[in-house]
Image 1 (cartoon, one colour):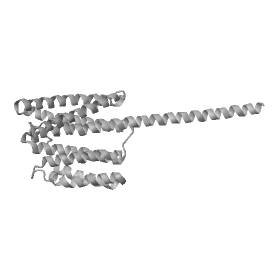
Image 2 (cartoon, helix red, strand yellow; image 1 turned 180 degrees about the horizontal axis):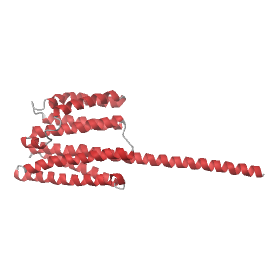
Image 3 (cartoon, rainbow, N blue to C red; image 1 turned 45 degrees about the vertical axis):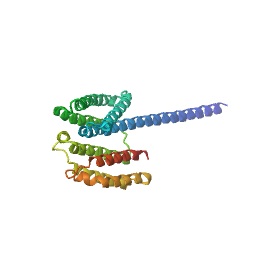
Image 4 (cartoon, helix red, strand yellow; image 1 turned 60 degrees about the vertical axis):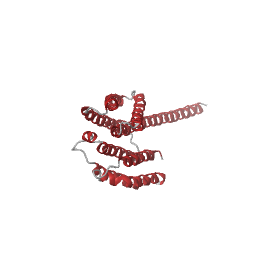
Length: 275
């Protein structure tokens, strides 16, 4: 009877330890999954805010050349609302200590940029032109906001230890490059005022960026498969249609076509990570 009791006690302890290990493993796995989901949401938010920030200033450049076009003004407001919504979503993650300051800094830079943008738009609507100093400030503030978001993105990857799969990373890099190029192209082609303030002489020219994007898309194609490969193939088809306009950006103004296809390319690239 004593031997049976000892056996029962030993077995019970073994089962208890096993159960504890399983529960602990389940808890750790669940916690890691939650942290990864949190990091993924933060990364997506910072990336989407970058894309939409380029859309705001790109839409503004197009509006500045056609200040009576209500549809173009609506494009500006739509992009602004998208960034507002994204930042509101990111603020729900302020409890994540390592990224709280970055979210606050991004929000402050956005509010400054948005204020400048609204002032310029109102000036154009009221008097038909904008203060050149404010135009310069606008471009710089947009770049600073995008840079803050990019730094926050890298910080999340570094601090969380989570990184998106290679296809998602490549797609996001290509989408950001496309958005940057589209904005630069619009700045140069919509008005002589705009092109002065978008970028600097030390930055890569549009044709150089176009060659970089071409390489990124080819790498993306070679690394994708199935439905993703079909999407990337359609992206390259669209890209081939406007690539010459980007490479020879000083020769002909086809801003509407370039904008249309660039946005379609960005939308398609953004969809690849979900396939």
